[in-house]
Image (cartoon, rainbow, N blue to C red; front, side):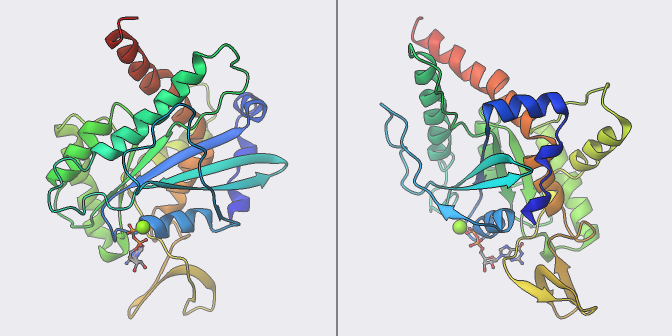
Length: 297
Ligand code: GDP
Ligand code: MG
């Protein structure tokens, strides 16, 4: 399935640049226990997956939580290699007092900024390693009502440090109608609280097909996702990744059933470069200049 990620089909210029620099993309997943983070990561990779201990950035303190772990996979398509890293953050929101549950995550993101900043300040900058988080997938409980205070607090604390991509977890537990309404509600809550989620830039000189494809992806935010690591048989005799119900089968890779495919496309194909660029040019730059200012540099 990952053979279809299509990053070899990126626009030529972007593509050449990335091939030269090497693809390296890091996403983080955040949300309460049981919302399907680990399942979605596995669904996303569903390929030769190996746990890898991230080398700690030099001269860098260990992140303040032990709960943060990272897995990576090298994927190859048409001779182009992509290293996809996903940082899992178990335990968010699970404490009796959740007032500061965003903190270890902010610390982790900032520690990665610091590690990058430290490399930039070295004399020899030829071997820069970019472990910054390029996208944060935030899992919203499928309540069908509204964002909860913990969601709002988390996103407000994070939105100027990382590209936020909200998703509706376990969307197979909601009806299509409920999903549409919930998406509207989530978006209006986000707007009301002036939270900036990732907005893909629209390039006017892109061809119509690309513009349409990008619009279709962006219009699905917050993505209604379903994860599954088991293959099941559909009534019409196909074997699919999905979840089985008395009334039928929800297929993970079927765009009529959920937005998983769109989320994957956005991360690995259509918006990977934009997510990286926004991280570097806006989010990291803001962090860097504020830090240097605070240090009186
Ligand atoms: P995590 O704690 O956020 O990492 O959640 P897990 O991935 O461990 O999933 C918790 C439970 O929810 C497991 O029993 C999964 O099988 C189930 N689960 C995961 N994804 C989905 C989903 O999309 N829909 C439904 N209905 N259940 C899911
Ligand atoms: Mg988990």
